[in-house]
Amino acid sequence: AVAISKAFLAVEGQQASGSNRIRDRVDQLTDMVANTFKRRLPSGGTIHIEEIQDQVELALMRTGEQKIARAYVIYREERAQVRQKDDANHHPTLQVLTADGQLKPLDLNALQQTVQKAAQDLEGIDVDAVIEETVRNLYNGVNEADVSTTMIMATRTRIEQEPNYTYVTARLLRDDLLKEGLEFMGLPLDTLESEALETFLQKGVALELLDPQLLSFDLNKLKAAIDPLRSNQFTYLGLQTLYDRYFIHSEDTRFELPQLFFMRVSMGLALNEEHREDRAIEFYNLLSSFDYMASTPTLFNSGTLRSQLSSCYLTTVPDDLHGIYGAIQDNAMLSKWAGGLGNDWTPVRALNSSIKGTNGKSQGVVPFLKVVNDTAVAVNQGGKRKGAVCAYLESWHLDVEEFLELRKNTGDDRRRTHDMNTANWVPDLFMQRVIEDGEWTLFSPSDAPELHDLTGLAFKEKYEAYEQLTRDGQLKLFKRIRAQDLWRKMLSMLFETGHPWITFKDVCNLRSPQQHVGVVHSSNLCTEITLNTSKDEIAVCNLGSINLVKHIKDGALDS
Image (cartoon, rainbow, N blue to C red; front, side):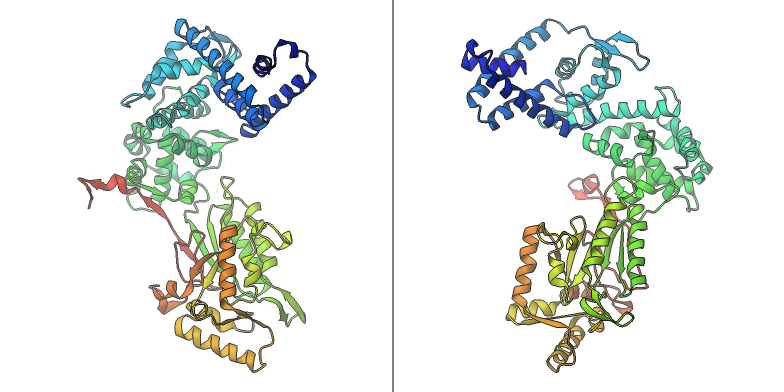
């Protein structure tokens, strides 16, 4: 506020120092800047003075105070020069508040050694500049824990200038993680990660977070295989993501260290192997060297009491209440343990279809999809990320037009699903009608049940037979539309909302190696897996990522 006031007075003169208008304007701008940081850091944190000054400049420009902004830039530059001069002459003596409430002088030598160690074997790192920026953003009485956080922020802001700073930042973050984990486990802070393995497993089992079978491994053999230096490969974003989502924690205290994380996952994968320790070490070497990385559910759950390791589940929802809500329950339980979901909703009867049991009319697919959407929100993936589900519907389904609008931001919100994904399951016959500018007939699957399990020419013949039934008056519930109009709406919704994305039924089935045992009715959330499903069969896929860069030797992939 003082700096903003000085900028106003520099433009309007000292006679304006008592102006209520200027005072109100300064208060307004100060609130804008403060609110910006409250949104960015809802739980608090360290803010660099340069970040504050950047926001002040933005606030002045956004409120039309260009002249004041120019004066503020000049004032800011003058203050920066003064700070640089002060820093060149001496480092301020700062008192740090320790965890036990004692004040002690800031140890600049310790900071220097910490940054030098993190920058070891890396080029382009200015250790002195990092120390200067760290000290510049500290204050008397700063918490000891905030000193390392400030140091991390000082290196993080330099990543765009020199990519090697991402490794420095990751190593500083790793030091923080080691301190947090070792203190929680009651181990000396100089304990090697390998030596902490047994204590980590015992602690995890005692807290009912890890499978007790992990303690039956030959831990001495596994300890010898752990290489703490492999943590130097982490980038800042990679390690921060592991910390936020993956590491085992107790009441938000992470006590799983980076290399123990890889070993825990490897031990969980090797539980049923004949030579468990050998296989665990093989898995560990693959993961910790970044040659290969398992999928998120495997990293989350391997070695825990609920070792659900699969990435995606594909299901077909049957056309009865018991089956529909059974599928929704399955979604909830699978999402709970980090599974992604792809649901085939084509068999469920359309709006206004007859229900023989009650002699009433169906509400169609959309209300059930709303429940699926809310279930995905309510049951997140182990508290680590949002539930992920995709609903598939074939393009001949009578509810397809409403299905296309599920992600729109306008209309009746009771018939919108803002948090789930949707996909069209398009037969070749529809595309043929689009090309020919022909008509397309929409049916309820309760009246045209065979279409769901047919593909190619068999689908075409049966579809045209059902169309003939509508012309003969034997089918009452249907709708004829121009194929190009429906196609245009598909593309419009895809452009407007990103949904439903388009997948092709006949192409997937033509290339399926399982044609002799069933039909592919949908894909998964990411549209990468095409496996048979039915009301009695759930398809499962397990994903993993191969780091091709690590497998290139002499300009070619290794063998």
